Length: 246
Image 1 (cartoon, rainbow, N blue to C red):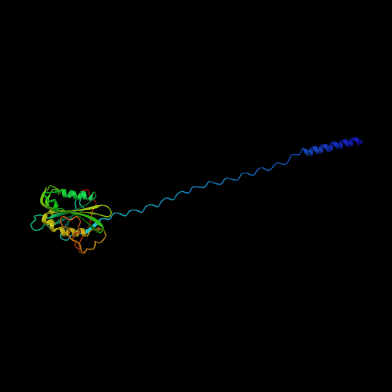
Image 2: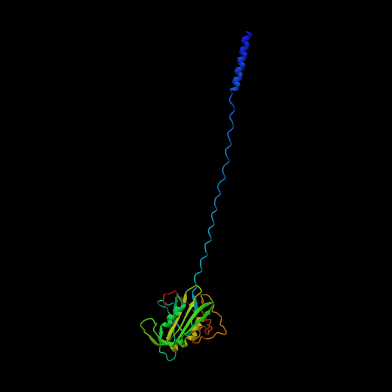
């Protein structure tokens, strides 16, 4: 009996040891998840440049009308027109027509000269002047045969021309073309230069008279024409819409 008891005890102990050895190990903890990747930086869009301010509308030129001249309704390509009274001995008066154009100033002056024939080129006066910071290219032809008139009039003998191209600050060029019998144009010379001296942008003021201004003389290459003070009550003219040809 005692021997059986010991055998049973030994077997129980062995089974207990074996049973203890067969117990499962506790599960290992799961590995920590990797750190989340940092979000990619968002590219900042460059701000759009501010819009350019609108360019101011070009200002028309205006001038004082000589009281001796009669302003008449402009027609066709003309921006303004005037009738010039005939001088003593002339059967007809002259005409001043104003055009708003463009192109090379000197080439247009030469085109006016080419409308005359039979004159001494030494008598043709070409001057440059400046009024209110605006260039004025002026040409005077005292006498010749004029063939540049409009209509069916045909060439005219003993005609003269006073012409000026005024370059406005905003770009357009103002063509002032005065033609007629020689004596009439000679008499209109002072009012013509008075008109040019009153030139300004619309809403501006005429340039003050200079004490040393002198009239242009034949053969001069640069001249300041004799100005005439514009009367405060003199009517003024602003150019009409641009045309295409003088």
